[in-house]
Image (cartoon, rainbow, N blue to C red; front, side):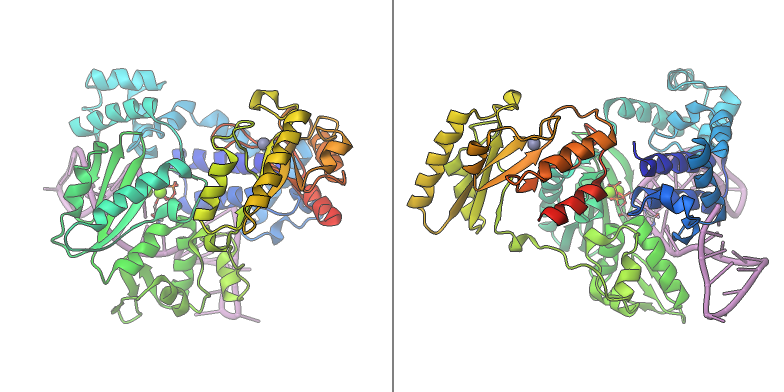
Amino acid sequence: MSDKEKLAELFLEIAQWLELRGDNPFKIRAYETAARTFEQLDEDPAALSRDGRLEDIPGIGRAIAAKTREFFETGHIAYHDDLKAEIPAVLFEMVKIPGLGAKKARVLYEKLDVQSIGELEYACRENRLLELPGFGAKTQAKILAGIESLRRFQGRFLISEALPLAETIAGRLARLPGVTAATVAGSLRRRKETVGDIDIVVGANPASPVMETVATLPEAQALIARGPTKTSVTLQNGLNLDVRLVTPVEYPSALHHFTGSKEHHIKLRGLARDQGFKISEYGVERPDGSIMRVEGEAALYRLLDLDYIEPELREGGDEIAAARERRLPVLVREEQLQGAFHIHTTRSDGRDSLAQLVAAARQRGWSYLGISDHSRTAFYAGGLKADAVAEQLREIDAFNAAQPDFRVFAGIESDILPDGSLDYDEATLAGFDFVIGSVHSSFGMTEAAMTGRIVAAMRNPYLTMLGHPTGRLLLARDGYAVDLNEVIRVAAATG
DNA sequence: GCCGTTTTCGGCCCGACTGTTTTCAGTCG
Ligand SMILES: Nc1nc2c(ncn2[C@H]2C[C@H](O)[C@@H](COP(=O)(O)OP(=O)(O)OP(=O)(O)O)O2)c(=O)[nH]1
Ligand SMILES: [Mg+2]
Ligand SMILES: [Mg+2]
Ligand SMILES: [Zn+2]
């Protein structure tokens, strides 16, 4: 784990423990912000700490800077150690139960001496929660159901699984009578790689049967909450679905609200407040109390003298300052894509043949494809031996001759071997149009060794590009230790 | 805990749903 990741983890744990202790919510937010800041920091925190520049980072003040220096000097943060000793670990487990937060968890710990989730389950079955202040039969049943669902489903989902399901459901809601718009929002609209749930916002006249439809969806297995403007259900695959219903004039504000992120809203609404406006999902309230309806998200940003911020950028980092200073990046749009290079066929571990892939690419309006099956050493993935490479090169040549308006580039995804060499001899490498280098083995190397390995491969004149540079598998495996700043420097230097 | 040419103290985004509540706290979005 890098220093940044370690610091992010330490400060996030501090925030969580402070929350369990019932501490000041703004102090908790300060630690959460610090955690996110270190996670996304471009610079090396050790160097900033040495140079006394930690407090130059927005969101890092005297106290957190001091703790960061303490981390680099001693390897610990005493405040973190103290909280860890003070806060019972079972509280941490209890608040993972949906609907059970810090306050109630503490009551359970203090009044019932609950030491584990198993004991909590037992206490529920014995009806021992009924006697507690603020608890009742429904709360007890909800906790019991929450323990069940926690055991069956945990964690986040891949966008590739959640987005098609979300769009199917949104499409169905869009066809209900009285509905003017139904859009996938939340982290899915921001195109996060993994998502916690599905969020959909619907604009409709109030008589429209949207909330009933959501509550009785065939994919739903449990109803979490149902009100006039918001319904939440758990779907069969364990994903939660939140649907927010507003009137058509409120819809642009509601779409913006439900797209998030939370941190983006905190910054944007703080800025609006400084200018005398109050932003909510219903519109913008002027200083005189009148409500302004915005006709679109762009109008909302314009009102605050900001450039339009794309959903993908709304993470509560530097984007609002960048929008004010007119220096937001221009995002690549899907319709700009003309091809792709990292493509496996059935010759190694791909699902489709060359012909099927080209047909699919043509259908998208693409003009080229780069074929890059696995190399020799990746035997577990059907890596190509030298004769299979030769055969594929002939196949691609024939293809290009037959289809002059579409170009297939012949490449390979070569393993970067532990010593940094590529997976074929020079003559074979010279036969490709391009070579991707990827690490598929010996993930446990030290950061210095892994960086040296990758940089050595990049300096090989036959290597054209680096594949999956972090080595992570979303929701399955952390990336290997590597100095990506150094990798990027070498990439720039070697072209 | 962080922040600030209005402030170095007093703010910090704003709202929905639930359950136990007799007026609102807790949890979540
Ligand atoms: N203003 C405001 N909006 C919030 C807050 N929490 C959530 N929202 C809005 C913005 C979120 O993107 C949207 C959906 O909430 P979610 O909890 O589903 O978060 P999101 O989809 O961003 O991430 P996720 O992948 O679901 O964890 O609701 C909040 O505390 N304040
Ligand atoms: Mg979400
Ligand atoms: Mg949600
Ligand atoms: Zn690979």
